Amino acid sequence: MAKKELFEENAEEVCRADFPPSFVFGVATASYQIEGACNEGGRGPSIWDSFSHTEGKIIDGSNGDMAVDHYHRYKEDVDLIHKFGFDAYRFSISWSRIFPDGMGTEVNNEGIAFYNNLINALIEKGIQPFLTLYHWDLPLHLQESIGGWLDKRIVNYFATYADTCFAHFGDRVKNWITINEPLQTAVNGYDTGIFAPGRREVPSTEPYLAAHHQILAHATAVSIYRSKYKGVPIPEARDKQGGQIGWVLDCEWAEANSDKIEDKSAAARRLDFQLGWYLCPLYYGDYPAVMLDKLGDRLPKFSHEEKKLLLNSLDFLGLNHYTSRFISHATSCSEESYFYKAQEMERIVEWEGGEKIGEKVHILLSLCCACIFYMITRLSLGSFSIAKSIKAWQGASEWLYIVPWGLRKVLNYIARTYNNPPIYITENGMDEEDDNSLPLNEILDDKLRVRYFKGYLAAVSQAIKDGADELDFGSDAISEGEGNQNGNITHSTNLDDFPIAMRKGVRQCTKHPIKRFASYGCLMPSFKAFTISLDEEKIPKTVDETLRSSKWRRAVEDELNALEESGTWVITDLPKDKKPVGCKDFCTCGQA
Image 1 (tube, rainbow, N blue to C red):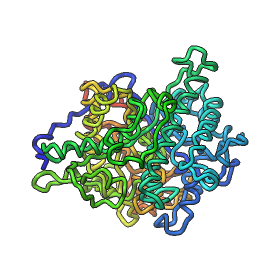
Image 2: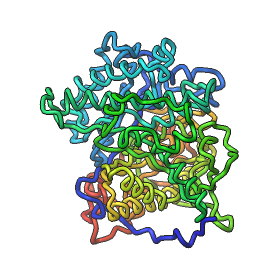
Image 3: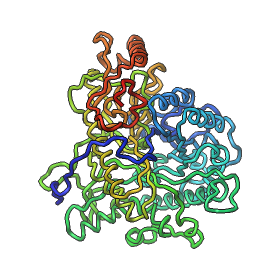
Image 4: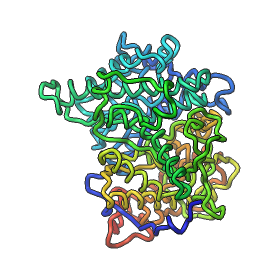
């Protein structure tokens, strides 16, 4: 088994100076999880509308009908992103808000107008839009009429949709993502059935067919963008927009559990079933050799023309990474999923001697951990931390252990294996258990997340020094719905119940709008907290009391105004020789 002492490394304290000037910090969302307005503005239903309204699919019956009402309140959200000084905002477009039936028969001008308004609001505030075309919310009509991603015709429908978005938004959007986490759509949508569309009928083949068509849809969209809009490298391109396009893949690092050849092979196999499944066709023209060997005819085949289309069809890679596992070879697998059984491996969470691979984050999620970039947005005006720390929190994720060295390893692996592509870490972070009964002062303590980001930011900095082409880092912390492996959407409470003035906190920071400003330290592990003082009697004692308390809202707003006027932010443990990320946007005391 793996020996801990061979992996131990001292995490450095890092700050803005440790990252290249071009390195981007931002926030992100996904359309179904935040927009709401499910029956407004000409939007058609998606598979997640149907899935979340099907009895038994979502444990608590939550859905995204209203979510956090971003559709009506996007200006407030953009103001928050700007207020906290972020460089970029990644959001996804609802396909069925552009084409209600998904087929491109008639564009919905109200949908176009909404996203134009959002993009313009971002540009006006100096925020770069990163636009994701597909974040799992397939138009329901496509699922019901042709079988969704199981039918090859969807490639052309996606191409029409992508072309329409490029044409309407590409003059201002320069960063495009075609598909977010195609593995999750394929495996959890067509094998385990815990994500929409919730199929488990033919798990031995359907996930690979769905993935095959997503890969072709991605490459087709990239070809359209490059030939019609980007202007590079095709000389005859028209309407040159000069942007870049890629897609987002998720991967947990796979470390061999021993020096045995079979364990090393199993770890390599695990990475090929995650990253190689979607990157080998783009770099080498076909699926990884190990997948071809293990799956045989269950893997669809690319034609000669399709292979030409696939090659080099990305300008950058988005990486979603949270945790790591030790891997050992196993001919029989305890996992129920056909996808995992085919890999002939076991995932292990213990070092030699029984100690866990990292600190535990007990979970409630898995659906779509909102993309990176989304650090502190969706917090209310009172989104600072009150320094009332009592204990370290555990998160809510069963599968999530804090293993920063795994991020460094996966970044270096991608650099070595796939010609060092530019990388945006589009998701990273941890959540917390939803518990209304806890006192407010306990909820506000967030030491575990501080350690998480200190470690992972240091790992990114180390990977850059190793030579990885790293462009971005952000956290998975946002007011979006999440689905766990039981299909539960943890909307941090009923999203439509939050007072508008509070602008609701994030799903991962319990149900509290003032939760975790200090814990993120504006993306900075180099200082501990922003601290404000409020009279004890003004501080609600529970989350529910906070959500109902107009007195609390007024107190927080008054305190914020006073801080801004007097310049009395209190910053602790701030290195004098380095400037933390975003401090210029938060600190008025001159220490930044």
